[in-house]
Length: 342
Ligand code: UD1
Image (cartoon, rainbow, N blue to C red; front, side, top):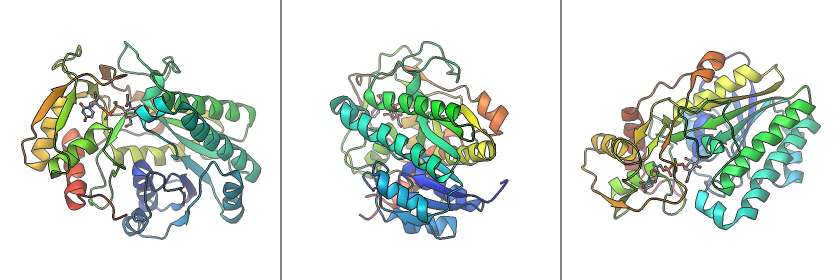
């Protein structure tokens, strides 16, 4: 760690936000969280404090509420912001595009305006590999085209990137890092915090984990006729703790600098859906019986990162393998079969 920072995490009670809060505190930073608890709950807070070893300043506010955001910046000293808050359900974004554009863009713009007003100059943004849209070329590199996204959720990530980049161009004191996440899975090694989606999980790993505890009756593999080795989709799964650490490296990189840099945050390795189910079966010690189902609309066959830029400029590299990702997910899920107490 270079300097001790007081970092505002919007959406800090969510899956990636909570793990990043813990990692920040573990290396001595202080954390302020702003979260409207739309897809998270208060009971994660004592666990973040327990793992991080200190108190968190928590504000139950919506980042879309500019007045409340302004009050937070008036009372808290903030050195840097990590912007996680946002709606993230792909099918919902297809059904309710305006909700997604309004929410995810208003929050980003409010945050930038409030930061500028209060002289807070550093931001790390939670972007996604989804900004690359459908690419035939793998691995994905940061200089490849973006913006041809397959759904409104992806477009909000792309448009937020554009807004942040233009803001950094116009305000010479602003330093921004855009982190394009691949597929975060896993949980803190303690098993105390993890992913706890509302309702039936959309994403593969939380679904598989709930299936393994018996909370879900059937496991479907969507599509077995993709042009991949075993016919199922291939993704770059990354341990959420490695991802959380990438945020700390991004802060180390940007604090004191201006401009805007973008980094992929992935391992560079692709695993198929069947390989992941196999790895999870080993981790939980149960055979997981699945059925093949039709392809899911909008899925691309293969997606994995070239993480070389992050290694070169941030000195960051993923360290936890697929086995560890599954073991840690299982520890969280088996210790907390119904997630957090709500
Ligand atoms: C999805 C989003 C992406 C977002 C990311 C966040 C889509 C199209 N993309 O990525 O924008 O940034 O989540 O983590 O939703 N699968 C099954 N059975 C299941 C669930 C999933 O076979 O019950 C398959 C999917 O068809 C896909 C793979 O597992 O092939 C991974 O799915 P998922 O975990 O939802 O991630 P992405 O689609 O890669």
